[in-house]
Image 1 (cartoon, protein in one colour):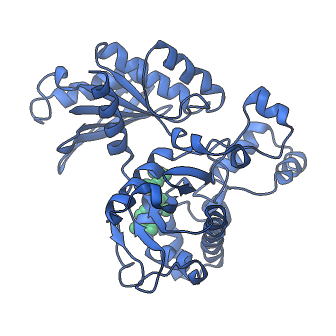
Image 2 (cartoon, helix red, strand yellow; image 1 turned 45 degrees about the vertical axis):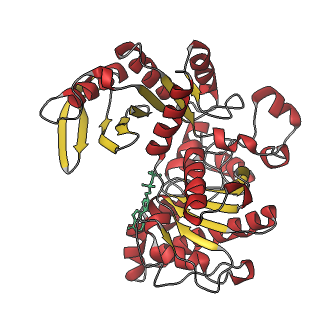
Length: 398
Ligand code: ADP
């Protein structure tokens, strides 16, 4: 089945056409939507295409992506009917969506309602869904939620120690994000180890620019580090992660900061970038460490510390551990960071083989022979997971 996967942001639209038996046929990104100089890119095999053009809105972005997918010189598809379904990454599904769903008017209205909880993301997702419905009105659309996999969290893990009224009134609670990735890599781990997912205690570390960890018992999330928003938990590229919330009040008072200014500092100016003063990208931090830069060393040490601390606490939540997974940009490529995270974790049965760990972006078992926990690198593929979910739902309705 050929499925168009759409990941729509406020001013960008990532698209990928996936044949669920053959794999990706084409992918690209449209950036700066709403401007005269929007950037369109398309990748087909080793061929790359880029053009700057005016793209006023998401409707136009979808139309342009489809025009290129149909362009005979690329030989991707010959007619729009070949696209049998569209799968959308939707960031927030609130408490309503425990799994992916076929989109109808009611579902779309709910996604729109959750814009209150994800003001930067859900309105863009809704725009992407509407744009596709306009251009391909008869093609089924499926929403795959970042939050859905985490809906198995028990109340003791998802509630905050705040007055309960705020949960009832505003639905303030931990939702968790990167769910599609955590679900995908945990299933892949079970397949790779040839063991039923239901028998495994897994800690999945999704370490990208945004980063989160999930504790998964028998295929169900029992705790996760991101919370009401993707700001909570680990220190990230530009996000602070968790710290004493009283600091926010203190800084707003003493630096005379407005709420949007504080939000900007926490989300865009903190994390690895804020501590190192160099970059949000771990590759730059590693380069600076080679020159002896003390703040870069500190940023790396803090990052490793919080990941180790989270792994330890999740092993406690799980009452043991069978599998530790590293995924996403840094998890898949960060050889030294993985080694530092896994050092002196033998109390948990975690030990990695440094030779096996010397690899990037490939599925690998990097456990040492003495380890009782399997440590795996599993490249994530959220688009493939979205395509698979979409295919499953669309086939079920046939
Ligand atoms: P996003 O959250 O934007 O999807 P990715 O999963 O692509 O992020 O991860 C991006 C991050 O991965 C980069 O910011 C960088 O810190 C890290 N990264 C990617 N490649 C490498 C590498 N070869 N070595 C170390 N870190 C890497």
